Length: 409
Image 1 (cartoon, helix red, strand yellow):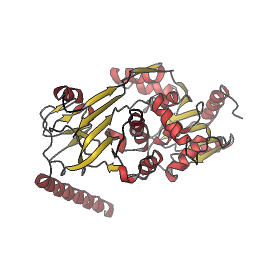
Image 2 (cartoon, one colour):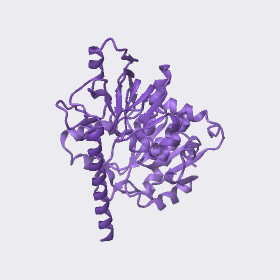
Image 3 (cartoon, helix red, strand yellow):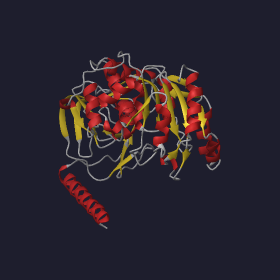
Image 4 (tube, one colour):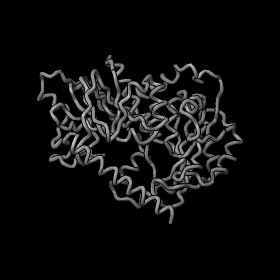
């Protein structure tokens, strides 16, 4: 009963805060956009204001089909329960070689543009929402773009004017977890650097400790940060929008790897090789419920268990710089493979409910060797299900997979 009372009070407090904020913004803030167009359409209509777009060439990346072990029969059993379209998508991701068509890198520069909100709303100097640069839509809009990731109601906060240049690293889910922040936010720094732009400030997620640690690692200190927030709305002389990609590019992965490699505390040249088991036993979702049994088996082959949520960003990077084999359930911590030496063996443990190719794609972009081991889902929660690992089957699979590359003794 006490827990329910706490949740109720929390909801009421948040409701009061939201309504108070909306009332203040209506008095002192800015009316939201009522119309949208793409940045290219807007630039074409304003040829004399100095806004522009820089393009690089499109490219494709071919990824081999995944090699799979474990309870393979459960994949088709689950796929048979899906509708035709979803089954076709999943089967293609799991069984077929993939060719990822990557669009050209784009750098859009807009004079006197405005940026704000969680997930990012990009608004032109005359109040038009730029749909290709924004993951936010507004309730008042007459033409709602298709990419309505976030919805914002009411007036925007008071506008704050900034002198100089602003680089926008935020977009969509980059503020929500370590995976999206590392892979979708930080690589935009590469595009800014390669374009030769001098950026005075960055609009970027800054709430979590790992965000602050990673930004410092990539040369962005607190004084240059405009923290992404629904309470933030800023305008700058020139605003740069590097293109967003949710598919890992080899250039981006290389940028992350090389930046970490240059640090004075890097462990790539330490000569130590570690076998890493990334445990989710302290998590409520996607957890191997027989984690101790898995670890007992892995310990025979020199593996050590790590709970990444207890480690700093630096400690995680150092660990993965020394890794030769990485095993773990599907989770954001596996993204640290970008810091590992090319050729590292990566084994993702998952269920048929979550056959997504995130870590397969990332392994291929990192030039790693990837394997997917299918465990048995336990609680019927779809792609967030916990799992039970068939330990003898995992041991046999690891011996077979790793022996293809070298010794597993």
